Figure 1 (cartoon, rainbow, N blue to C red):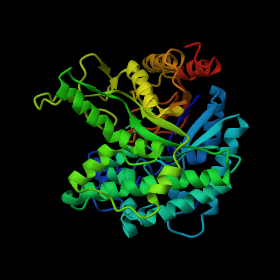
Figure 2: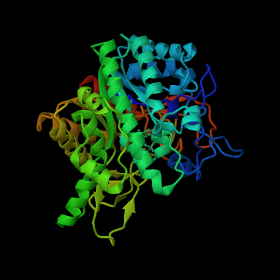
Figure 3: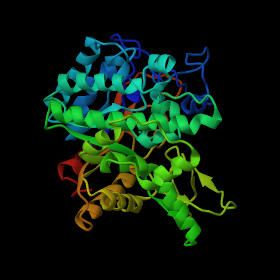
Figure 4: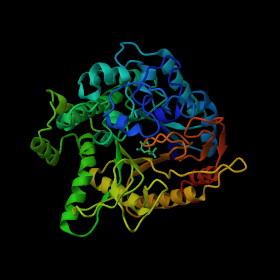
Amino acid sequence: MGRATAANQCEGGYDQGGRGLANVDITPHGKNRFPVMLGTDHSLEFHEGEFYPAKEAIDFYSHYKEDIQLFGEMGFKTYRMSLAWSRIYPNGDELEPNEEGLRFYEDVFKECHKYGIEPLVTITHFDCPIHLIKEYGGWKNRKLIEFYERLCRTIFTRYKGLVKYWLTFNEINMILHLPFMGAGLLIEDKETALKDKYQAIHHELVASALATKIAHEIDPDNKVGCMLAAGNTYPYTCNPNDVWKSIQSDREGYFFIDVQARGYYPNYALKQMKREETMPIMEEGDQALLKEHTVDFISFSYYSSRCTSADPKMNKQTEGNVFATLKNPYLQASEWGWQIDPLGLRITLNSIYDRYQKPLFIVENGLGAKDELVNDTVIDDYRIDYMREHVKAMKDAIDIDGVDLIGYTSWGCIDLVSASTGEMSKRYGFIYVDRDDQGNGTMKRYKKKSFDWYKKVIATNGEDI
Ligand code: BG6
């Protein structure tokens, strides 16, 4: 048990230690954020008057010792974090890595071990060096596999003995929704956009299998997982058309995991790509690689279930983890409209386990909420309630249903920049950071009420909640 962060949302230090620029750095807060994440804004640079939250984020780059000490105090067994590719290979295509970047992560991992915390490392979390986008067009170019392979060889070798658990791509299915974030893709032509996405997806899937192969070769103790933005889709009614639509909607995400966990493209995807003329170019050897190097475990994020209807008149939507969804009348929602469904977590765990029969790891889950700092703390009972119900659902999945769940790192041990909105005010942490949406504040850290609550949950392995 522990919690999770991503480099682009907490690290900052965007121009320090020889780091190169990345897609996430030039993604602003505010109304221009979505066009950049979608890949429809092609400027690839900073603009006067815009605020770029990832540049400093919460400055984990300078505060990591203090932050990890607090994670240690909470009793974390695991800390999920990601690497900034451009800190290790500033342009992405160099032959030699940046020693200062490598050393930074080495220090972070050593610091974790000091407190008995096992790092779980996401190799890319919505992160791609700008140079690879400008020069090669991001993941639609097969060259990216070679650069990613070099990155993997470097980190698996350097961090052997320090890191055992790896995730290849964060929320790999996000590429269909936010192609610039997921794959450094710029959408040039609506006609070919889907074909480009599937080509980029194929390259990421091959790169993921290659990473799994290399990780096992370098250290047989390494365990590699895939990562899905999950949450089962419910049919709005028992009308078979709604049920069919919900199956199709879930397959959109399962497709990735089908390849990563089973080792081949499922028939429904092959048929669809043929029909839509989006079949990617595959090279000889790709299929054998996918088949032979499937993942050791399946990780996923879960914030909510989704809901869909085949009836075009049913259009009352609400926000969700990027995917908009129909409003489910049985569920409450967060201040950002994300619906709250703890039983949906148990349903999702069971569906994924039934499908793949591999160990599962929940690597994100949590409540984004507005917090008020009063007398140096936040009384966040709403967050504790959310977490408690989800931990209960998880326990039921293990104790009653027999799901093989190996870990739980919920989102944001410490407040960080929101991926979808760029806000600081959408807070997930058990540690409050004094920083606002415009980048004002002291960066000082404060323990929230949930800090002690989670400490107790970890100490009792979820028995005392
Ligand atoms: C997931 C991402 O989509 O959800 C995280 O992997 C993200 O990076 C998290 O922060 C919560 O989303 P948001 O938009 O509330 O930050």
